Image (cartoon, rainbow, N blue to C red; front, side, top):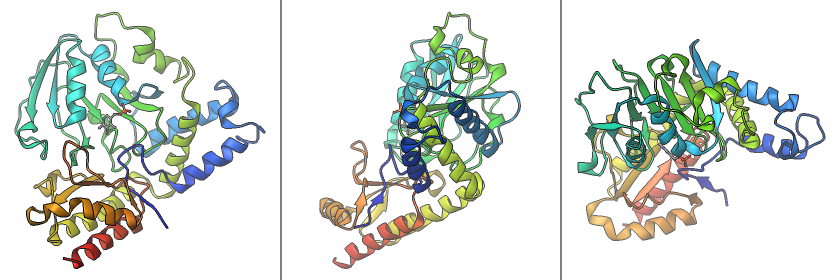
Length: 356
Ligand SMILES: *Cc1c(COP(=O)(O)O)cnc(C)c1O
């Protein structure tokens, strides 16, 4: 049976990426060797790294004065590297979910953290509005897509202070005005590559402003100067990232992707609204994530949750269980998920509802 992969992360990759990785495991760039057994200093891999960086620059229209690097450690290490490299005294954070909260907690190791707003009062089912960011903070940190709770910032905010964003789960899903940010980072395993690599886009002039000593490996400057080759980079995930970026370019880039993502999300949210068995967990359509669609059984049908889960599974749906802190269901509609999979889920919801 055809499987429809709605996992939140690691998650679906383009078929193109999977196939190119398989080929490169057999024979990487005509070397007669596997991508897993070549030196990261080989000219063939150096070309992969350079091309991955230039694809990101091109696809996101990264301005002059910004560096693009690949690191290890996941987005979770960035929760600490950002304040270590950027916070002299204090920073502002907005608490929009589990990952935002974890970022905020790590920042407290390095200075004063101001939580400008939180949506915890309603289990993070909205993006707070109308908060004030103090003008004397070293930066303001946001999480543009809240993977677990299914909320998303759909625009790039204008800020008077340096802006830092965790874009782990919506990078490359829409055009981004990189010039509004000092740092954009994310783990690759949602929308780019297999787990093991982290991308960071940094405004060079935002660095060098803290007085604390920074260990070499945790200093962004180290990796910028060595072009992500200070130590051994995650060779295979970087190769896979390049293939996804090539695929993205073939598809027409991030603007084309945004259109398809809007269409996919609209299909599913419309069915959740229409179908009497289900309801969305995020009330305001404006705040609803295009990447992670969260929904629960509506009040009169709560007892059908397990049955629907089993039914969906029997129809080939994979990974739609909601996170334990939200319950219900979560369908992740990352770039690589074809619209046919969304249609299959919608059909499955309709078919299930016909039984009641
Ligand atoms: C998945 C995720 C993380 C955690 O990423 P790791 O690479 O596992 O550390 C952080 N932030 C967001 C928004 C995520 O979706």
